[in-house]
Length: 172
Image (cartoon, rainbow, N blue to C red; front, side, top):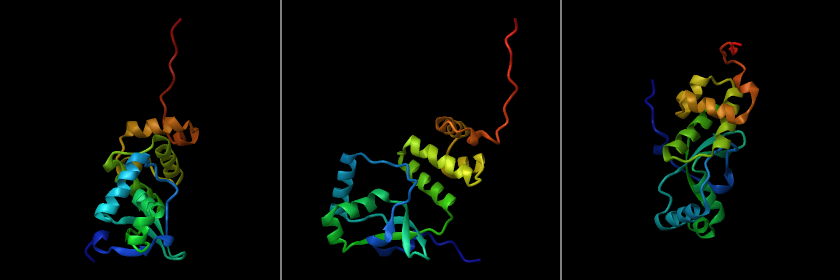
């Protein structure tokens, strides 16, 4: 069996035009922090690669983690010019549900994510057929957190496989 090699040992310089944001990232950064990130990248350079999935058919890279660093490359002329339009990228080869879980793990490890968008991801993972236990295990969520996110969405379909106790009646 081939030994596991972490993606960080294979950083690629990828033209920013080939990199695209995913459509599910629940992480948001306020403008002052984004400005600070731009300064950090300007002063220190890119110190972490952007984690991507490579779609071989389209020859494009979909961001799994590093959306805000990618955004800086798109919005900062001075950074883009200095970096010659190239982003440092590492590739993970995982199906969409696994990539979504990876994005959440990266975000939660930093302590920031949006509840509404997180609820949408939970809905999408459930619609993909991922079990509650898979979701809890793979995105670091307790069963109570998962239940609350399901409740926030208000979608009955998220509870379709749940068992409920019998209702009770008040005695006269």
